[in-house]
Image (cartoon, rainbow, N blue to C red; front, side, top):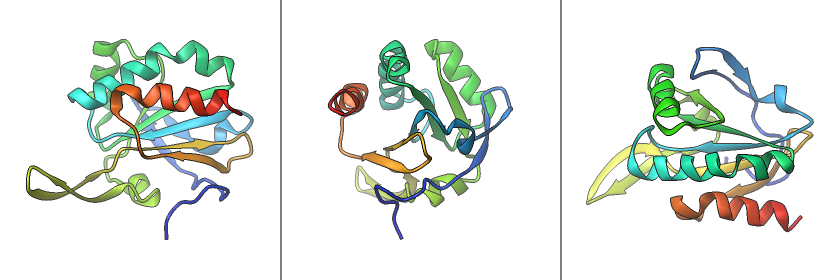
Length: 154
């Protein structure tokens, strides 16, 4: 079973970079951009996070909150936030349960080797808690532009 536009976003609670529990359903009333990325402080993930960081004002003006989810520890997320001066919440999915719930933990191929990992995917959750849009075809450097283009076209 996959996640589809229109369905209720699977709720979850994860620890953020400061080890505070954050629950998706707490953000009802705002649009929530839940983006799944493979690993903090890697080149592609850094470029993607920087784009979202630099788009914070535009996203906030559109009533959008950003939550980044990866299988990292809260400590790694804190380091990532501090080093990149990120201005949004990152969530630690160490056991990959939320990645599996959203069907982004999959078999991947890289340089001829297969391994399980996070398939970079972003879900826009609407104010009522439903999946409004799924972004799964983008380059990391263009991710924020793809999201903003969609939001501004509404």
